[in-house]
Image (cartoon, rainbow, N blue to C red):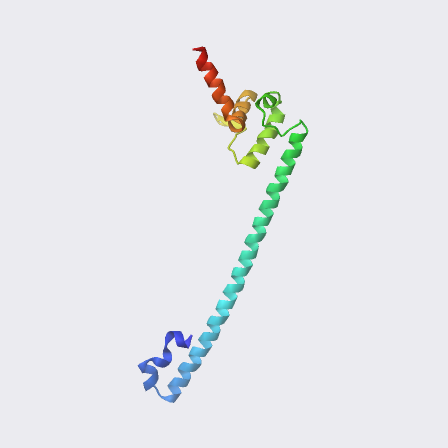
Length: 153
């Protein structure tokens, strides 16, 4: 610290009397010890923050894994998870909602269960939910349907 502030190299230091040098030297040494203590405290605090951050990431990852396993187990009850468009069309609304929950977790897709009508949120109908899922799972099926429609014109 003293070397950094170059106290002993200044003209003020060279021309000062012995008593003044002792006072300055004592002040510089105590400030150095205080600064080192502050640096040590800051380092410990940063280590604690880093550990808390790592713990939070670990907990979030475990929560996502738990939700994924729960969603897969719900889908297994109806023979899923499935990505087959024909199989998806056979599912009931509740089974389709389970498939959507799994898609939202694994693919991060923004499939919605509800939409706003006036001041209320209303569930999408089965056909609308199915269309959203098919758009995510099998976008090529939508293109095929469109090309078949165009052939009829």
